[in-house]
Image (cartoon, rainbow, N blue to C red; front, side, top):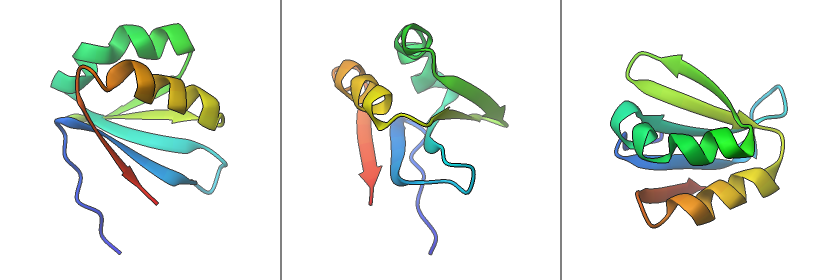
Length: 79
């Protein structure tokens, strides 16, 4: 199943990847708006072209990021 990615939003999947990480995808412009929150939470990031993947094994940390970021950018969560 293909999932549409909105690079102006924080795209989060509730499923873990094969390595056990929750992954969120965001575009560079939106990333710049929440980079301080990401760094404060100690989340891992990987850059792939114009997308940035945010990875963590802790749903609690991702939930904190959602709460902090929702006033600045759109949040999209897929089951």
